[in-house]
Image (tube, rainbow, N blue to C red):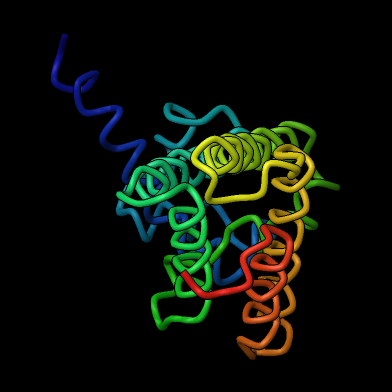
Length: 201
């Protein structure tokens, strides 16, 4: 393998990492390729060596975002404690990430979801795959909670997982619109009710 081929994945990853905060701040349409490549200090002519089009680049950004997000989610849901404690820990982390000062942790789905779903089928599908993977993990944790008796046995794991993800995604959007954490606090209270957890864990 020559040096150029060996470096390719690292350069591609670097472009995606640089693009992430730009897209979080400005959205997909408003960010030009020249801006991304200038920020990444990569020659403009080399872009198509790494991505076939701006659309495929956008899909790659979304996939990279979800890869990192799901790895963090897996780590949070693998923490010690009951399944109920792990779920609440995950949602606490979600709340903190959307209300802290670190913009890099903001939800890319909230920023890009409505915009790119109407622009690009491949980007919409990448968002859908990522959302489905999150819901699957939530459902598995809820099933574990039924098994370890930390959650009510009557819960429909899949339906509750979908409801929780929809609630938190909507709360994140409202928190962005209102610049107030209250929607996320409401989502946390609703999560406890939906999971049958009256007392804080």
